[in-house]
Image (cartoon, rainbow, N blue to C red; front, side):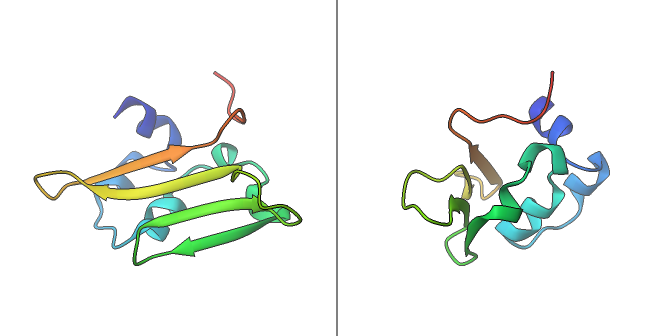
Length: 90
């Protein structure tokens, strides 16, 4: 929960009902997604709970990936992967 607290725009938003991966993505602070949204191809698969950003001219590994899973009790589990690329300063 500590990492999530740093990443979301408002801690209270975490407790609001979210419907899909896009809702979770929109909670992330801008400094955590950098310029992914501007110059890259966004792939959104709401049904399978997946969002990624890939370079426009390449099929290389995505610069940013986010997936929604459910644990055994039905609670949401969000996984974010951004290989070798971080924006926020700690």
